[in-house]
Image 1 (cartoon, rainbow, N blue to C red):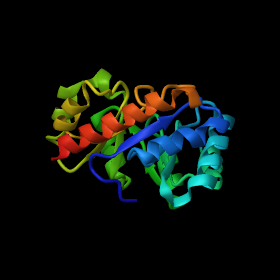
Image 2 (cartoon, rainbow, N blue to C red):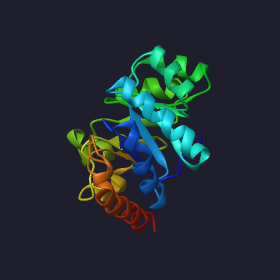
Image 3 (cartoon, rainbow, N blue to C red):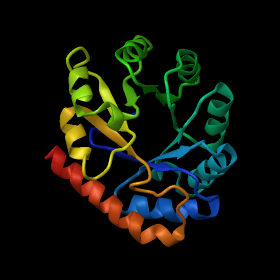
Length: 207
């Protein structure tokens, strides 16, 4: 799966399935086509994946986040997810997902976990929680892992995203600062404005 440098992934968490398509429409219209639907509330998340997949098809890159076991991998694939994001490192889950020919962006925290991910052929890792680790941590990873593609997740916002991009994060998954947890159609104007700001900022950083 070709994820371009500078991509913003919107994290959908705690949103009612009746509202998720309206929120997705606003994101897509304003340049954000990568979505991660969290399974922190599993049944709700599955329903949201089904709704987005049915209404948007290949207009979006639809993934599932907070995936922690094999059964969830199977469920999100059936619901229409194209890729999987995990909160932490699990070699068995990575191998299982790869066996299913599904892209996985596994969560990592330490250089040791990054080494294991590379050994399994993982091309993109999710560094989480990146804001707790800090900008210097990301910079230091570029020494031993110059080719590593890092997705920064956790505490990233409009104020610090530029610093993390310069430090070495290639992509970002943004949660509540872009789509508030439990958002509804009442939040569409706020989501629209934030989507525009993130897309424009990433264009500036990349230019």
